[in-house]
Amino acid sequence: MGDRVNKLIIGVNNLIRGRRRKKPIPHDKVLVLFSHCLQYSKCPQKIVNDLAECKRCGKCVVKDILEISERYGVKCAVASGGEMALQKVYSSDVSTTIAIACEKELSGGIKSIFPKRILALPNTRPYGPCKDCCVDTTGVEKLLKRILYCT
Ligand code: SF4
Image (cartoon, rainbow, N blue to C red; front, side, top):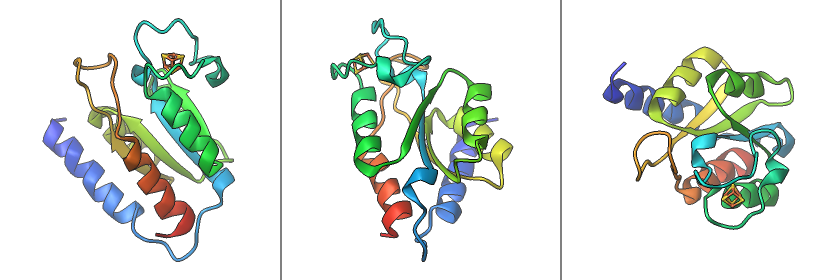
């Protein structure tokens, strides 16, 4: 599917699923899920096995995502592929996921997981696809505030 269609699916999804709520979502039901391409490609830590492996050196945005998740008291997970991501989103402990990945993965995830709520945040790819990707962490916080505090 073309990039424009994927962007359209993400935009419509976020508009509908991310609209201002009357009732906040409990913090412990929210998951911030990111694809492992955000990890610095030369980092030796095996964060896909265990996020506690991250030494929080600040060479990639994983440190910031972990800190934001802790600050807001939400779950955080990393996925190395679509199947692993779906497993985490399907968990009964999760009602809402803020997912960070490329547009193609996000668009596929939104369709596969419906009607579960996903808010999708596309990554940025300054070094090309799947390597040393990044994300605007203010966007993560904005979405968290929206669903946790109905802002
Ligand atoms: S913050 Fe540092 S230790 Fe953590 S994943 Fe990134 S490079 Fe590795």
